[in-house]
Image (tube, rainbow, N blue to C red; front, side, top):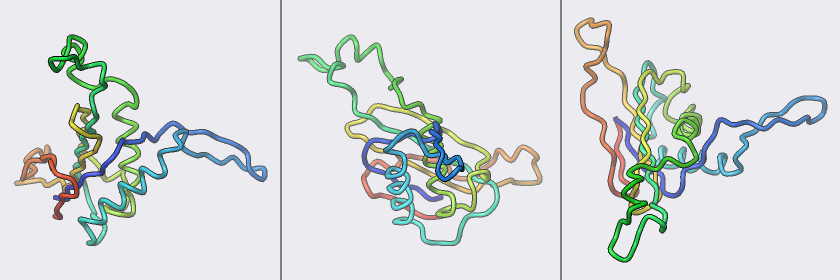
Length: 166
């Protein structure tokens, strides 16, 4: 299993913007933060894994951690508004964060993001903005067509810069 963290606020990818250059249409991410975020994701992955590109089916788990807004706190801690919002439900949406990470890891950790056959994406509150990523091979035991017995569980790494390799 490969696990790593990317510090800072996650940037979405997926929404595209098109324009014409020299008679050809060029597409780019609508978010100006997508390209730098993808570079940070790739760099964090390369800090913990320098092996060959993974082949075959893969499992990806992403947990985006966000700071709670100040409006969720009162003089005595979490206020009514904070208690009413146990999860971050504001933009960007989880799928667009996942798309950015999937794209960033293509050609870095795995050949292509089409290899991802199981994916879990979560958004949670935390003490700081960061994203935890875990990748592992999908293993099939005993000829089962379900392939649900996949070995060790995925867990988030709680400290900055922590990571490991398969």
